[in-house]
Image 1: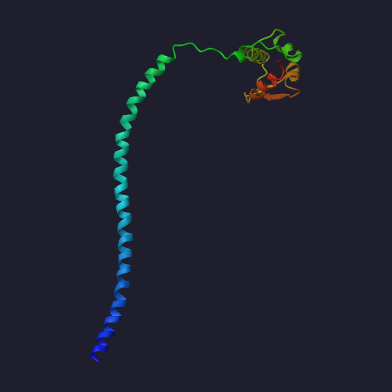
Image 2: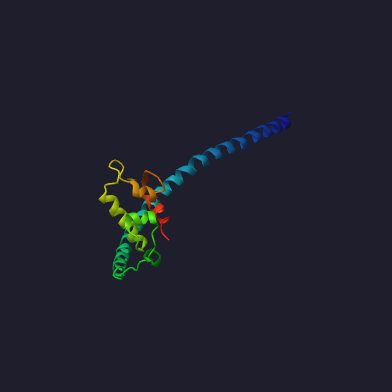
Length: 157
């Protein structure tokens, strides 16, 4: 019987001990791992930011000095904008019949709008068309300034 008790005693504790070790080992690993990651990341991030900030400021000053030197050359206008365009009859009633570049056409239309006080008082982006401008704006009474340039380009050839 002594051998049977010894054999039974050996089997029971052996089955319990590995299960207990696995549970304890998992809990210990789970608790220690996040604490190490959080502690390691925060100081490293602060040191990296502190080192990079002064390094970025110095090259920015040199780049500004180089850009200022490049601005001395004159900019040439795009040839497509400077090409004289012939206005339609409706647009010619507002700006004149002579061929003009697109930029001058827009300026003359704005001069006409300001002279006749056609810009909306409440929403200054809108233009309230009179009889001459209604023909240019395809019959619309109110047009936004962005839509105006699109409509005017349809009257240039």
